[in-house]
Length: 489
Image (cartoon, rainbow, N blue to C red; front, side, top):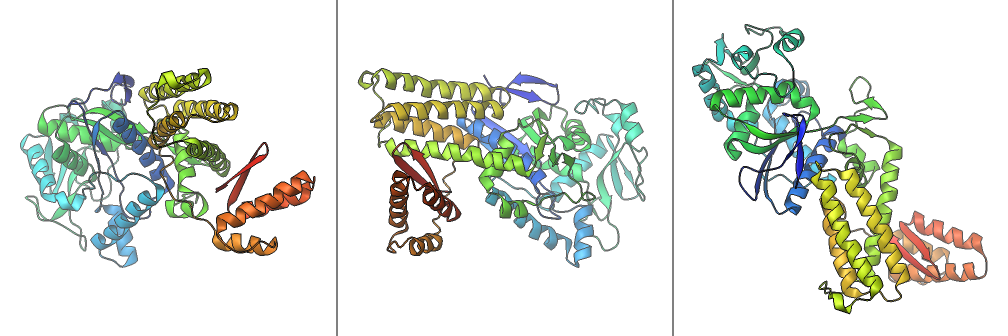
């Protein structure tokens, strides 16, 4: 049975959705005032894997990720750029969504924008004012924290701690420092919407309470985000929603761990914020995703060059195994046990154990490091089986391949990205080694034949030179006895 760590209770709990067979999931999205960075990637890869595993388990998942397209940072950045705030945020919203697509993250079912739900937010604020949980102060509306007796239950803070950490910003008219804004009156030159309290715009926290409950109902199953959102954002969401609706807001609160870069916290002052666009120019998207998957989603992660290189090397092993299975696999995966010899039966047992161990790891609060460990154990056993069998069973290999692909896909791997041959580089090698220019595949085979001959003649210098030239041209080779395999990097 799947168990999920619930931030609200600080323990792992059996996952029981509100509606059998369906999962309703909301993850806080980006505030679109700049390009997405790898801290965003860490969060959204984590929840992509969680979503994929729920789908693997057979759940129908409805996944929402909001877009905050109006707030103080957007207005400030738009003014500095000399642009309309909504045009500015729309531009960055598109860029951020493109970044997620290029990173290989499955799109959400819905990306609601804050500015498309202003009327809904006004209605919720009116409800809170009517129920005396909120008060109006010269065009602003604030939530009165002391009125909600459960305030602090998510972050495990008491009111004394909350009051000690609260501050009043210049221009705020709230009664107490710990109260938070539901509606902000417009300043000169700012975008605004009409409301019963005057022209203004919603506070940040209200949008997620409104959009999640509008599309998912309450209570819904999973609300996610980074650990930095536990307080005050998610704490305030709970206070607003449960005060207005009078019932539990969310059943499972899930939070991803923080990301460091080379051991240090990401910050503008340190200049170590890496945009996803820049990261993808330097590293492959799959290597970045694998790096994140190698950490448990709740654990802190340290992004650094060596870790990405380790991910790249691990991915090579995964792809080599995939290609070996593809080579031997037939079209039919319906394995008949009575047709198998003893070694084939042992391998069939390994395939089934692989699936069981994978699910056991992921059922334990989505333990991806343990799941990856089972993946590499299966790779080791697969390679042993293929080496020992002179003619591997086609049906068995097809069955193994399908299970391997299904499980890898949950971890966001082997998504079928087509790797293109660098034909120009291969043609240059043809000129260097005096090989006739024809199809790139044939050129590679002829150059490898030259390398085989060089090895047989103990001309290892030439053999190594050919290997290195092919590597530079984007072709990796693997010697397996007298046979040499090649693949596009």
